[in-house]
Length: 316
Image (cartoon, rainbow, N blue to C red; front, side, top):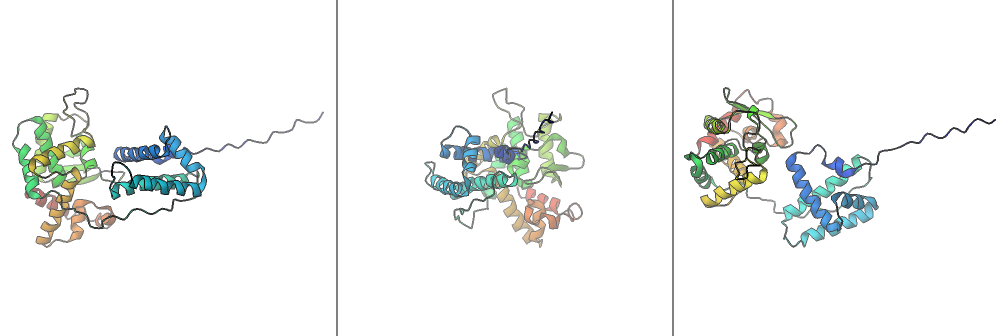
């Protein structure tokens, strides 16, 4: 009797789920932005789901994919919502980043070749101006209403510390040391929070708000909606945007949360120059990533970041 034929071992390989891999490890804000961009791409592709749009796009090889990408670019340029060049470029970047992930996980072996739209090289980074911001502060500075006390503390964090919106909304009570006057800040593109020192006026604004909010663990800035289901939950980026927009409109010039960061950095540059300090020292205040590595060794030694934060805070 002949021995039974040995069956060849079946080798199975993982078929990458590119969309899952692309979105994994992203922050809440990045996920929200990519979700909007991929929804636009899904509409362009005319399919029922984002996953289907991604799978179809990646399945036909580099020639058809690049052709589709160019058509998508034209679709965005002629979009009925009249998208700005920066918005179009962001949506195109999302598609390129998706293909890059697909290459990394072995789903494709090609790149997208189209170019971004040209945009104005000079942006207005001055923010709403000090006078407008002072008026915004005054709208809530002397109020005893809990909502206004929260908004005042939030405004001080944006301006005094030059923070991005994501840094403000991700603050937790346990990040603040009221005795030492320090706070751990979540910074864009960093996996770990960074310790910063608070100017006295900023610390007092936070204390006043936390006295109302309570010292229990959780987000520093919470919703105070009429909808009781939302009250006490972490305030959203959209919620912060609406607060800044409402206060700035009342102050006479509409702005957004990032406009307050622009204003803070602009004023920091002017004030430090007046005091004979260098632009390199302003980086300790603004935390721009491109030169952060060079500055990190001096953080916490020379106290420059706190000096600049205190100078900026004292302006209003």
